[in-house]
Amino acid sequence: MKESPEVVMIGLGYIGLPTAALIASNKVSVHGVDINPQVVDTINRGEIHIVEPELDVAVANAVKEGYLKAATQAVVANTYLIVVPTPFKGKNEPDISFVEAATRGILPLLKAGDLYIIESTSPIGTTEKMMGLIYRERPELKDQLHIAYCPERVLPGNVMHELVHNDRVIGGVNKASTQKALSFYAKHVQGQLHPTNARTAEMCKLVENSSRDVQIAFANELSLICDKADINVWELINLANKHPRVNILQPGCGVGGHCIAVDPYFIVSDYPMESKIIGAAREINNYKSFWCAEKIQNAKLQFELKHGRKPKTALLGLAFKPNIDDLRESPAKYIVQKVLQNANNEEHLIVEPNITEHHVFKLTDYQTAIEKADIIAILVGHEEFKELRINEHKIVLDFCGITK
Image 1 (cartoon, rainbow, N blue to C red):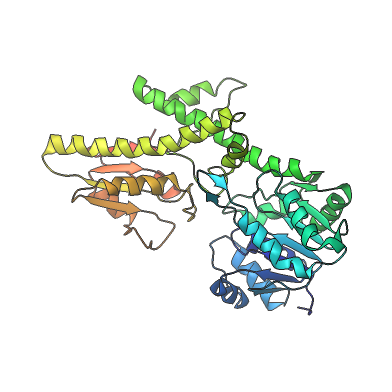
Image 2: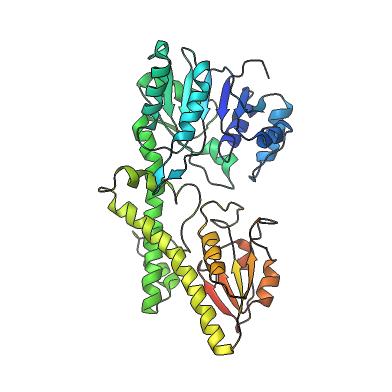
């Protein structure tokens, strides 16, 4: 890598590292920044610290060819991308302190003509707040920078493909910033680029995932109603979807991940009186996880009353969605924790085929768990579980519709 890289990528997590690898694969020098020295050392060895198909090859090649280097401090560049977490504080209130810290970290390095882009999911107005911060601290740069927001919209497990082929929404604080950011992404993205302003781009990211959360909440609410009404919700939805203008999603045990389960709160926090449906959807999807845990508890009690002994219970799945190893905001993990909290010298067989070990839960092979268990709760619709042949005498709680 030449002494002064073209791009500085601040944050080398699930989005930052794949994005850095993509840019570097196009022969553009990237200086990646992460506060974790272990992450930095891993990447500089040409290895990765997260699981994502094709990422290992992309990082190994980029490091080997000298286009990607990692460090704990930023350096001078022409383009700065902020891709850091935006966690919660208090009662689901977004915390943009990491975005601010990353911005303050590059303040001394900024120069006229530079491009500054936030990709982190952010409350509406964050880009403008960071612009205000930059210009207060560096007044000589007033109106000399290009500042924009461009949210990611990728699917875990397919990130490397979707970073290239998905459309992107790009909003600058002014038209010149938008155009500068469009020109940057055009070099790396084959999907269509849609220009707008920063506030609309910020809202677009939040609305996309809030929309999906609301649709899932409708399916989950149906599952609660159908359970009381003694109706097979899977059959019901299949029949309702025969209508040419109806497309109901499938219910599950809740909503997880770093997007759909999180982003709606960014809207609800700032606009609580106006976001009634969005807020209600969050409550429904959170309640569904609690409801599933209660269903498991009740099944265990009924088994003990009937058989005079405590059951062995298999809990299948920990990831937040099928066929990945990502446990962030996972409703399945919450359910397992809830069930174990109420355990009383019972055997629980916890299964997650996409990870080899967990620092809290002792994992069991899914075939062994199925054989030993009296009660089987399917929490995640992994492909492995779809092939299971379960003895008809076992109690099955299928929250994913695998057995239907």
